[in-house]
Length: 177
Image (cartoon, rainbow, N blue to C red):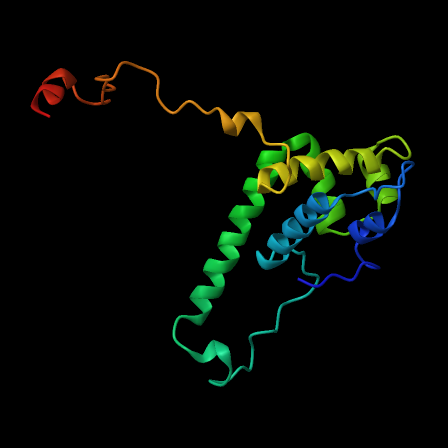
């Protein structure tokens, strides 16, 4: 996906250097922010100010003329929305607002700080933390998420079978299987 760095706050931050000479955003953070923006756009989550006329007047010509093309578009948009929601849930409610404001709505850091009531010059730090968490969710970061690494899928003895709700005697069901 091509991005105009002049219109995107992430591109502006990527071009800036910190005190140690390193970019303010690393490659994984930049890619995570762009991926979130891509799903936001693909999921048709951008606000509209007027009615959408983009599908009116299209004849049988073009790539949308084949059967089921609109269904594919809807499925693609739905999948993008689900990925978008999962990404925000993985980051958490404290940081997801900053990601939506800066990565998706392309607000500047100063505007995001004012809108959220943050102290001046704190937007960079909040955005860096949010993008790092997002990069971990996408698997782009070298630091792995410890919650995902050591997940326990089952706890019980080898022959353990859970009771089924609604059955009065689930032990009879276990004996038959």
